[in-house]
Length: 343
Image (tube, rainbow, N blue to C red; front, side):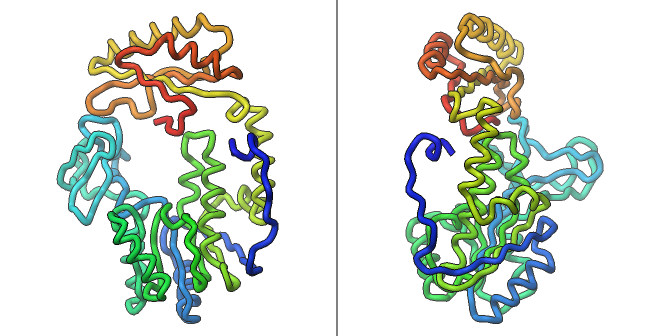
């Protein structure tokens, strides 16, 4: 979005090999009958398919069906990720691991449930339906070295893989002629992220994953989403989305029309962190050219036993914003210019 606004563009209006894609919206949040039907049709034609999920491996959380609490890290106020292959829970913020919990730490209810399907689980479901299909996992849990990446891509190119299941690694510019089906899951999760770029990220990813199929043959794209009213108008024209989103950001006063910064204050004592927040706010209020658009506890309130507060700033003048940030910089304060993470 920022590049489209700032720099001149040359638009290529047609593909080197003209093909057509049909887009179908389906319901659910897992490998359901509609996905299985599409995969069966593709395999029957001796062609290849890719299945995209935003969740790698078994990277998901345990939650209690009784009280609704997520099993959290004892040192950070975030849910611990479930890694079934390694048989442990892991905090992706401080690195703490523990055995997979069997009961709720809050109310004692058992068993716990897990949210969001991961690539490993998707492969298990696909293998149950297609035991003879050659299925491979393509994410950071399975592709850990350049050699493994080369091997996986070579197998895909040589048609030794029928169905490739992966995460955002799939969106890179791979060009294979026999991929005629893309199944895209998890876009609603991405749309729901607390980030002003959520729409841009979701629709960009849709186009990138859809672009891996139909390189030389007509293809099908299955999109698992309940927000088809948002995606449908832009399926044939990504630039239309960019223009529409730029107008929204201009009205809402978001980048690229302003500069933003995030100030994070962390301390082992919550009272000290809160006091530093108030002191920092008082200093920032002296600057007329910057606007404080949010302040308080960070969405992830505690990481590694340090309590976190944050301040969101914006300004039409990057120079004024940098001057204000320079005046508050000190130990215990983290400054993120043009932030991409608001957790």
